[in-house]
Image (cartoon, rainbow, N blue to C red; front, side, top):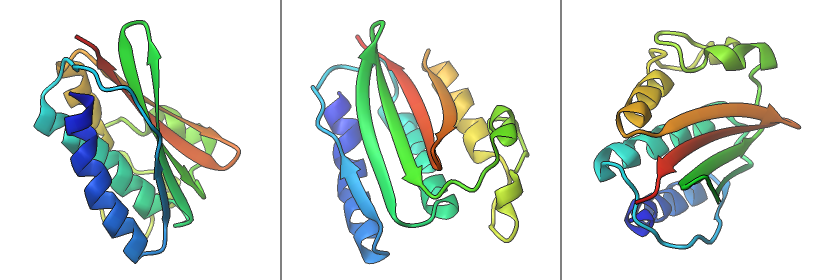
Length: 143
């Protein structure tokens, strides 16, 4: 269920982000059954949020939900995106790190693994930048 996926995420990150003074909102959603592995889904959302923490400006991280063609889209949006638009096509490549990654620890595998996991669960993941906000969206099939 979507509520199982989001309850742990919301509880953990509400506390973690309040400690570092980052605004965190999770929009309301309608609970539904998702066609995915709960643990791997949590891993995907956590990785997206950890990247938002690492590469954002620390002001805000927001999670929103939408429904499209029998899928639930979970969008994680963070302020202060310093990644150039030209890097977006590569962020899901293995061992690739963006121009904004200098000085940050990482292997360039996180989003690559997220994409592999989402595909194995018959879902998808994509990213975009709009007005200085990075948004990574995970697409889960509804059952």
